[in-house]
Length: 329
Image 1 (spheres, rainbow, N blue to C red):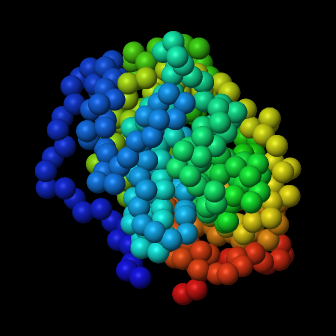
Image 2 (image 1 turned 45 degrees about the vertical axis):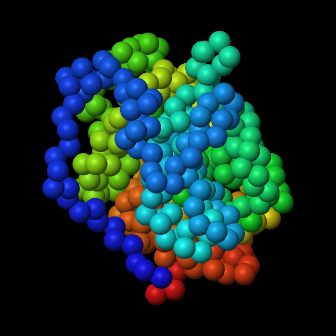
């Protein structure tokens, strides 16, 4: 299979400048503008809980569902999906309130609070809407939590489970997320949030920020400045209390599992990789030196090598005392 080029060629066309009001976050990017800029050739929409949910469904074969993390989008999987769709049906989506999808709203138009119960209803409805009864789940960060929680609630519906820098265990929120626990930030952010703060947060999730290209950085900024997103994040963050998450259920999972982690993750402690790998029976694990919170975006070729080996085995489980795993050279 072809290798993945982890470098993004420099664009010869400069990015259009943003107005001062846009850079300061005084204005928001309209939803229709985000749809115009960031949908791809395979983009589709499905109505879930009153929102038009952006997703891409490509390839054929065994189904893989890919779920991104906090403030990210389905684009974080672009280079992995390009490879995986050669042999699998690959489905990835923009979780609300992020990406092109944006916030869910009540019948009265109020922005819904996205806590774990809301995400459970959302992902269950999404899977039903697409008629997916069984799939491999690959989740990063918040998407990892949604993935393993789905596996715990739907025992026969998950074929394999891949957790990449997954959330779930008690932790102190990263400073860029924890800011939204301040009432002042929650009130002011929909009307004023400089893009410099967002850029700093995005650089912080890379082990080596020099790998972050300008187009990707602009995409993160514009999604965060998307219409309604900051207000939705302000409602969501105070609910992110991982002390209330039942991680004991991990010990009851009976599914081949792979835990991938960036050793320079500044958002979720790398020690949590050991917690996941030790609690999920037979889970394999890989630690990536030098990579950060989103290794699949920062170094897709390294992650893809491990995914190929894991997905290509008949029974991916190994005894718990042999959980450390590397893809064949």
